[in-house]
Amino acid sequence: MSVNQIIDSLNKNNEPYPTNEAVTVLKAKTIFKKEGKWWEAVLLVQVNYEGGSSKKVTWYRWIWGKITPKSGEPYYGWKRKEHKNVNYKSTWNEAKLTMDEFMSELT
Image (cartoon, rainbow, N blue to C red; front, side, top):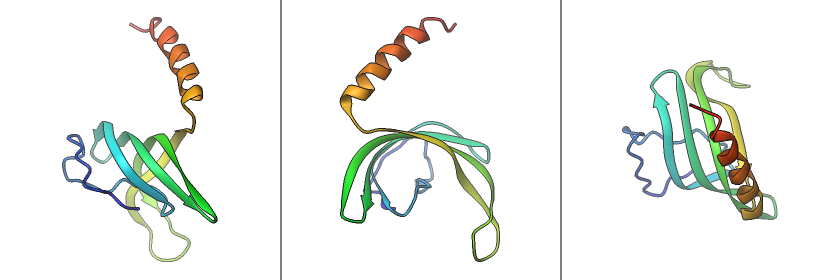
């Protein structure tokens, strides 16, 4: 994971975004962060895989908790709770229209 001088006012300590090592963070913006509880952010990433790479916009949601690695001692840190990739503008345009429509039902 790499962060290229990302300025994110809600990530006050410039904490690294807890992504997989195959992910390079190009841009990021924290939507919500409550220390020791929840962290949500939208990241522009480049995912590197054998034979190539691709850019994606991903909405991440992490929760603070105990991490038990395959080897080594358990520790506390940010664990990915969920994420959603957007790979294509057309996919996003349709999702955004639907989300905007549904948002009108919220108070």
